[in-house]
Image (cartoon, rainbow, N blue to C red; front, side, top):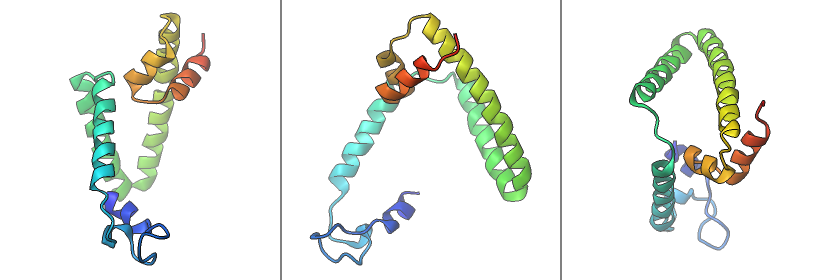
Length: 128
């Protein structure tokens, strides 16, 4: 995915030949990319861990859905819809419980690896 994104990005004006993709230009991106990778690592490490059986189940489900998308796209789409409904219901119930427990948005943001704004929206939209 990174390669596809890099191919679409062009060199900003003033940094060389604007007709060449960034990955071919004389632009060193290793510093900013390393900073971004380090930032994502910090976010992931601070997030609430998934229990191992759930993580394994999610990986297996993703693999099966990807295979189904290639072989039976209609079945994969139906399964995705079912999963969306399950996720939506479980998400509402979970955020409601966190609201009842008085979870501050800062703590929720860190635990989910998201922004304060998104965590606040989740808490404010909880069914109580």
